[in-house]
Amino acid sequence: MEKLLVIVGPTAVGKSDVALCVSQKQNGEIISADSVQVYRGLDIGAAKPSARERKLVPHHLIDFVNPNENYTVAGFQRDAKEAISGVHARGRLPVLVGGTGLYVRAVLQGFAFSESGIDEELRNRLRSEAELYGPEFLHSKLADVDPAAAEKLHPNDLRRVIRALEVYEQTHQPISRQVEATPQTPVYDAVLFGLTMPRDMLYARIEQRVDSMMAAGLVEEVDKLLHSGVSPQAKSMQSLGYKQIVKYLKGEVSREAAVELIKRDTRRFAKRQLTWFRREHDIQWFDILETGGIEAVAENISIFLAGNCQ
RNA sequence: GCCGAGAUAGCUCAGUAGGUAGAGCAGCGGACUGAAAAUCCGCGUGUCCCCAGUUCAACUCUGGGUCUCGGCA
Image (cartoon, rainbow, N blue to C red; front, side, top):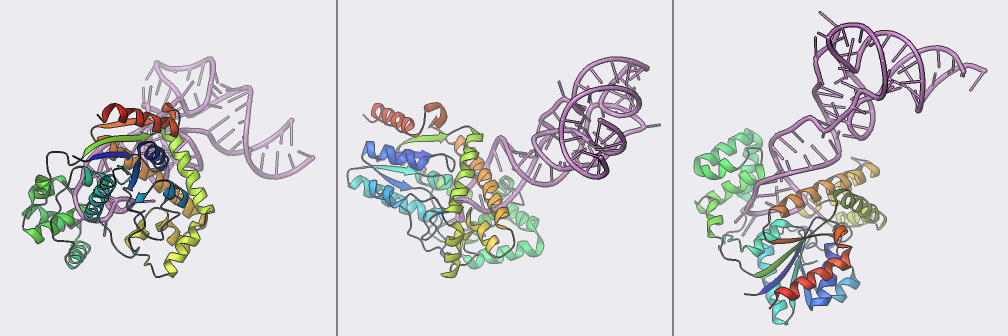
């Protein structure tokens, strides 16, 4: 089984810095597990690693998707697998680092996605049905064909209700079949590390980071993207920082209000990430404050690896 | 200094003919298998400024104090 180092944690906790440090110590290459960093041109808001950092350690799965395209987990799973093999082929250690929990899990657990892609037409049809008859309508429709899935989903969780219906209509199988099809044994010989820090400190870092993104020209970046033809409706533009700045550029909110919104939504996002990763098994957690900073954490991870790599 | 208004959740504020209190925002917890930085669900977190008094019972009434904000000086 291929070895894999995984570093997860909430946004702004310092994952990239730790990963950079560990990768240098361990002869590693970084594979970003980040649903926004994949998009070209979304630099400041996505907090992409700098050119200098990318020169120091090779980074993968950054900057390779057109921001008007819709990238998905299935694509990420495929691309990540390939990237991981590539790193191994070079005799180096792949370091999967990122805050997109679903992407990480899809790789680690080898989710079995069906061959059929997304049927946009079907999706749009279901969406307009929901608009016409309300979310309850779709939910009860799902209850007819896939009662188990309906039971697990709240009628208001339109995304998932629609997805479950899509799977049923496309494959005539309940969505739970996908879950059953995922392998029970791990796909990689993975060691997982989770980074955290006291909540108030994390929030302070988030606010600081948003301020420096603004100072670095986030507004100009979004403006440029829109002018170069990126649709404000594009998935990439729904990301934190972009969504709110688009609103500002449209004149719907003031600059100050947009900044506050970004901060608030990023705090909420960090909380959701923590909830997600808390549930993940076999994570070795490091509190960055308790451990004594980025370098100390990286050192600890290296020590941990040394003891576990035999 | 005088006059007036106020002090209740992290913030802005509502409220109780006396029976230990509730909205919005913020926050906290949770779910999550092809949009996931997305989507969705749940939860008031409180020395009701302080000290006395009246009362079976005071956040509420009375007295005193402290602080804040207006106005006049």
